[in-house]
Image (tube, helix red, strand yellow):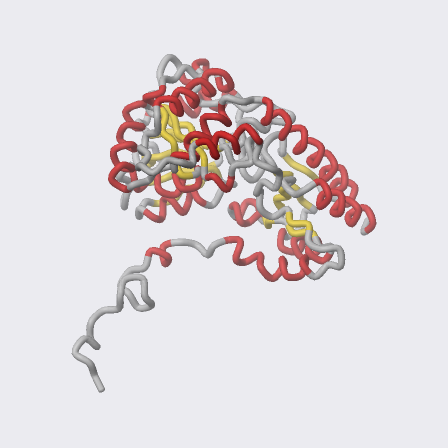
Length: 383
């Protein structure tokens, strides 16, 4: 029997709807890795999962205590956060980045991935605009462009770009996936190009505290950008440096006019960092000791994995910073993924980060010491 409403269009989001947002997006990369994860899980010694850079070490006690002390917060927090939080961010920016920036030019965000994905939309970009990002890059830069209907554009050098169409330019140093660090001269040239063409430059600096063979530089530093931060934003995360991926603790800082615009949009959208997390973020940014301790853990894991991979026959390129080794056997990346999965070792294929990575794999050294040692033993035994 035909019902009265049988000829109506499907509900939004249902199959057959006129427009589904998911249709605008690429396949979620890690879904394609699942069969290889099954293989790695079947190894008698268990899986050594280096595919995702998720922290495994404890949240530092100073941060846990700050979170616990703020749990009795029944009222709504503000999008901007309390003055103490913004002062803590500004103080860290001055101390660690050498950036002279006031608390009115910083804004907490609900994790850095959220900001990357929704920034073009929140800035009003859309069809006809271009969002540019490095040719080898974190996939969410492209996702952010597609969500607002803008055109995603890859680049090796900003000189390749059409300055009349690009509205938002991403740089990422240290890089995910390659670990490459952009030098001061290159950053200065990029800032100059962006300002000349009135393009907003957003620097993803989430791995800033994790330089190994090179010292990362922020676009907010005076010798890079001059006396002001017009047309510049920097994105920072506490996920890696402080083991706070589960807290979704991050912030954006820079051009006070753009930060104010983002604040107004995000207030309407209710994009609020929970009050206990705001308190934990302030505590984390005020303590450098736990960061140094975590760096020592990562440095040891990095050294062990790098030596084992090179002895096995890999070449490591860049990788001078961040939490990854960018490794190649000079053959298709999925062949390498399959081979390592047979050893119970799961890594990310380089083409997750663009076609230019199709002969590389990304190896995260965020697993426990025990899992790193197990992987090293397997690699050495299989040589």
